[in-house]
Amino acid sequence: MSTISTKRAATGALAGLALGDALGFPTEFHDVPSILAKCGPWRGTELPRPAIVTDDTQMTLALGRGLRTALERGPLAPEPLERTVREEFVAWSRSPENNRAPGRTCLVACGLLGDGDRPWQDASQIHSKGCGANMRVAPIGLVPGLDDDQRAGAAQLQAALTHGHPTALAASDLTAHAVRLLAAGTEPTGLVGLLRSYAYDNRTRYHEHWLGDLWTRSQDPGPEHFIARGWDECLAVLDRLRQALRDPSPETDPCLATGEGWIAEEALATGLLCFLLFLDEPVTALRRAACTSGDSDSIACLAGAFAGAHHGPDAWPAEWADRIEYRDDLLALGALWDA
Image (cartoon, rainbow, N blue to C red; front, side, top):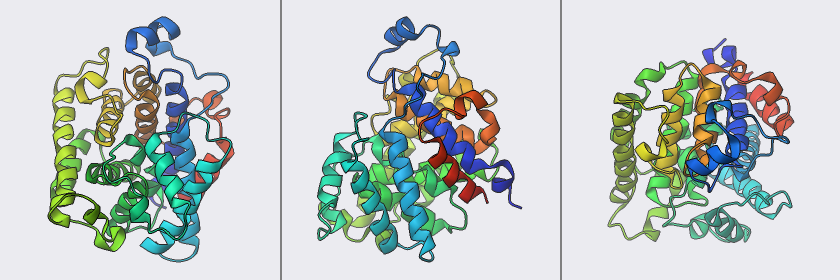
């Protein structure tokens, strides 16, 4: 039995993602003094009643369902994944439950994806690197049996369906890679170094098999130049993360160190910072992520995915996990991938 299935990393990550999302939903768009005035000391934050999530969890489930369907049809490949995830994203965009302040990029792109005859590359918002690209990518890092090319290509493709900026692609790839490493038992204290090495190794690798001619929608002279822009921005924010961890300040708003998380590379770095500041206190990590001046639901969502992949579902209070919205859907995907 693998390490991942033994500790039930997929169940832990999906539950943590949703719990972080629900904790951060009421605090998004507020600065830290306002959050403290409204909610009290951040270390005592309780899960809201009811525990409602945002589009972050909804799109994670949409990606998870699309990924599950694609894998039921054979080895993971670009065409079946694009088709099934496109269908799920469009269905999400048209659902009456899509009323949680979804991002504009996702709505515009999904509106265009709804035209089934349109190549997905023409729907992709090539200049957007919003965190909607990687807030939802955790399933790619949790599903077993993918090789490195499949995981990287799938992570970038799912991002590119809506967010076509190279930094959105690179940050999504890095986020899925981080989840995978933690699920497989990688020691978290070495995680930032491993992510920097991964970024350097992939800096000029354009996954044409998965992305087709997406890069031609940009102003770049070639595909390698296009994707390198994204990896360079991710490397810059990973350097900020490394600096923040050298002199940790748990009581300071993490956004001051690694960014407010509205854009993909900052959501990755600030979510990781919250996780790494409280390695042995996963609930505290979620509370810290929710009490931030930026995109707090997405930051906490990612912090929860990292912590859950590392610790498994026992990281989360049973009373919280039992009443999270979409609990049955999250548990079903987690059980499938943990098996």
